[in-house]
Amino acid sequence: MSEYNIREIMKGMLSDWGISGYEDRIAVRLREALTPFTDDIRIDKMGNLIAKIAGKGTAPRKSVMLAAHMDEIGLMVTKIEPKGFLRVTRIGGVDPRTQVAQEVVVHTKDGDYVGIVGSKPPHLTSKEERDKAWSLEELFIDIAMPEDMVREKVRVGDPVTIRREPIELQNDRIAGKSLDNRASIASVLECVAELQHLDHDVDVYVVGTVQEERGLAGVGQATYGLQPDIGIAIDVTFGDMPGAPSDATFPLGSGPAIGVGPNLHHKITRSLTETAERLEMAHSFEFLEDNTGTDAWAIQVQREGVPTGLLSIPLRYMHTSVETVRYSDIQGVGKLLAHYIAGIDDEYVEGLSCYLKD
Image (tube, rainbow, N blue to C red; front, top):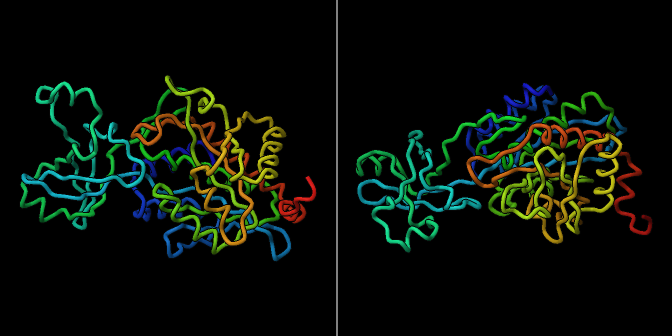
């Protein structure tokens, strides 16, 4: 897939919305993006999008699942205050410090309404209030309507998202909301496009998962149903920035971060590393001593277990509306995935469950 196309597809997804539980708009876009490669696309009962790219091996073929979550963090209306102001709670890991003065969209059954997140001005706050971070309970949304109209249009439980268009930055970078995890969806599309030029024996299941941001709620069901021989989660990890520890962050442009830890099969980790080395591709290692906090955790523990790997894209300012990535990292993850998949055969898959041999 050309750089132009991946930018346009990803920017379209960034401009759209799909918080946990409301991923259908992103699923429609992902279906459209995958249609040139396969017509075997469906939505399961949980809402996960599943597309099958058939391998060229003899049936029954082994299978690899690529999981990238479609959902983003957001808010939900909990109360309508006098004068029509809205109170909200979080869906996913929203940081209240990043919500002040944001433009938002309240999504209702009658349509979308633009609003702003308000707070008391500094002139009306005490020194103690100014010295502490705002809590979500102290913030409110103003959609500029009289109270009676707000009560007519808005319902408790309506979803709320940040209103933000993606921004093209210097040095091959883009900023915007929901790059966690739409950047990884773009990497999977890169992989699928690259596979058109490679022979691969195994079937590939592309899964756009739902509700990752509220506790990995979607990928488990997809994994249970597909019963893949290998599962690879694609997500983002922490990019370098001032004040962040260098041993827990990754420079933008440093290539795929290959996950290492007990949640991840060491032979898959080794194969991903060897593939990156063969491609002379820049890469790094993300050491994860426990649950990775990604779809990889839920993939690994389905049924009798699934050998699992994790590839991550360095991303700055996670869970804000200005998350920032570099395109070359997106492309690198896609290329690494494709060439790893092209090297999988029956013997390799069988070797993943043989612990008597290294």
